[in-house]
Length: 114
Ligand code: FES
Image (cartoon, rainbow, N blue to C red; front, side, top):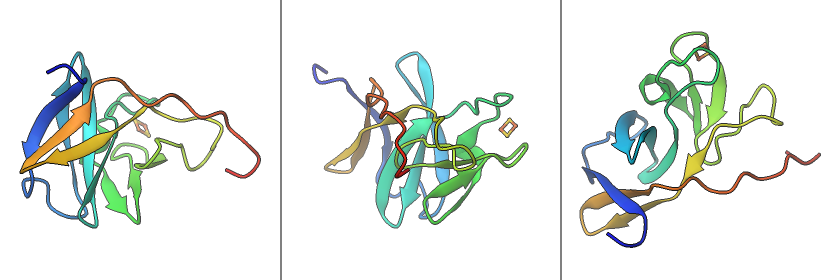
């Protein structure tokens, strides 16, 4: 594949409101089904390394299963301190395939409106 997107799963294999973890290149990426659209962030919680793909997803925010740090799955922003974030990844659906871009999105600079 020449455009950096990697197949991770078939449409329908990640239930709505849930996440799952996949290897993308040399990283683990958590992919979430948010109301029928897919969003992806780094799977590794920056606190102590829990799998964010196993966390509870509510209104586009995943809660780490170990100590309840919360991250927006759209951009990886840590909800309790928006100046910090985990990487987020572009997701696309091609036919029945969910694909994740292996390169993370460029980090946004934290602003006063976030
Ligand atoms: S490992 Fe995620 S909050 Fe502690």
